Length: 106
Image (cartoon, helix red, strand yellow):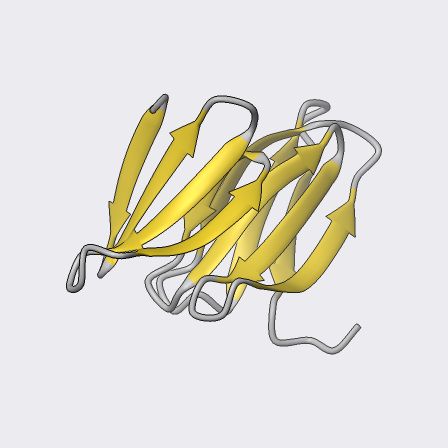
């Protein structure tokens, strides 16, 4: 394992080969297996991953389903969820900042 993050009931573990595994702390069971880097989790069960340079994917950890994908002209440098998980702050390598409304329809 390369790194771990605890968020609510979720344990998010980064592994080799750009793999991210999610576990339920309550049950101890693996709940999801994703591909990407630099995971960020919200308290309401969303997971944001850098999937490629300038690509960001947001998943629902409860069912491992892709919820939204975003493309940026530069690599993502930083990302953080709002406390309620409805927005995602993203900053790119060129220091351009975005606030993404995760409840908006595509």
